[in-house]
Image 1: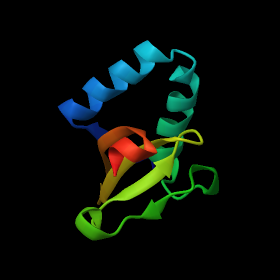
Image 2: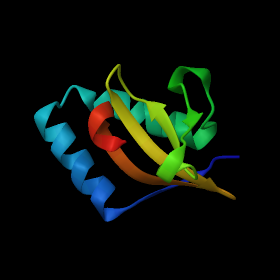
Image 3: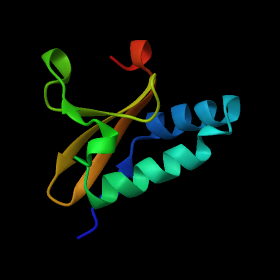
Length: 89
């Protein structure tokens, strides 16, 4: 079963800025979105639960430094934030 992806407006804005600054990320983002829909816990994503104020959310790795912050509910992956490690936490 494929999960639905749902993105906040702020996520889409940050994604646009990220792609504008680094178009080479386009393919990696596309692959990550496919994996999130198939299985958010695919080992290559390095998905882990966050703690503290983000304890209801998860993080996965897009690149060494770029992270995607999301939550899960029933059949939906809610995308909240994307960007460098130090900016998303």
